[in-house]
Length: 243
Image (tube, rainbow, N blue to C red; front, side):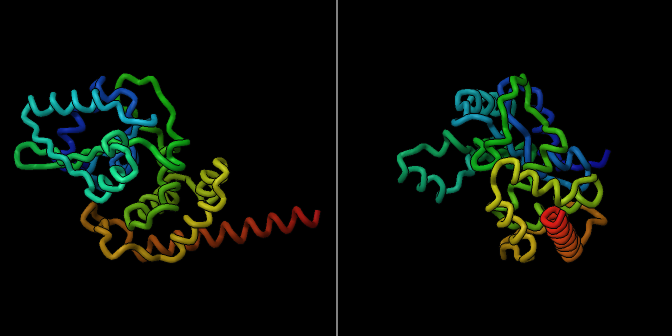
């Protein structure tokens, strides 16, 4: 197996993946996908909770346990998010907690958060006594859904690789949204990809692996797949109307 995780990420993941304090959390995002299809390196551990609020006592207990084992955990919360929640009369840490976990001079970002938006409708309580690493279909669905709310090169790379190498299609992409009654979000996601525009602060993915397709290849591949799907969908609709 390729060495996909930096030392601190690998060490922390090995420590927490079977810890019952995190039973029922879902590992999602780039690291979960990288562990599944081994297409690129990934650095962060993103743990989603299928509930209205985080189980804060369990998060606190894990933090204390890690610190007793030599890990240093520093909060890495967004000040802007903290103030937004405060204004709304809510506590950010009930919904999201971000840490930088350090050991031996290396560090990794560790995030706990409750699922929101369309992702909330995908996550279900599992009853698992350890972290759930979702199957590839779920990871594709979650990656598809996030593209309607942000435009990042890593998301597009992941989506492209899933379509190019793992049997998924734009039809599957559309089904993720339509099965949730989210037609507007589907159009937004497709339009974001077709625009080819990413943020100026996008970190890129060139350092995350050798032989990865260029961003231009990713954009063109996704654009071609979307346009082909739209033509096929229009042709099917025309045939049905004239049958």
